[in-house]
Image (cartoon, rainbow, N blue to C red):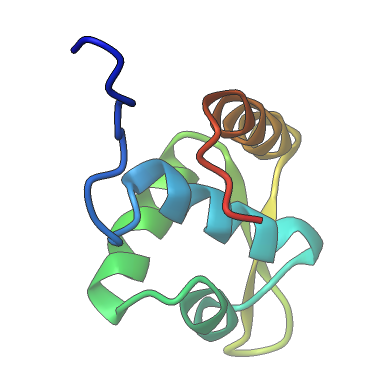
Amino acid sequence: MGGEEVKMKMNNRRSNIEIIADMLRVGEDGAGKTKIMYSANMSYSQIQKYLGFLLERGFIDKIKIGNPSVTYLVTDLGLKLLKSIESVTAMLGWLDN
């Protein structure tokens, strides 16, 4: 590779890790599915897939508030994951912020 800079991000599409980090950020103070979907710029099928993944692994909790209203809240484990993702992406220079 003689002096070439390695480009880890080949296109503008977000990685799974970036999507997860976006979802965790939105859910830090609790958020409904629609808010997470729009704030994290996701499709309905993506939100279903990723919410299931995060719930199964204990990174978020599903909390019932009111009759049909469900809120998703990041757990302590989810906050640890978010901090780890932010640390790694910052070290690799992937953060655009």
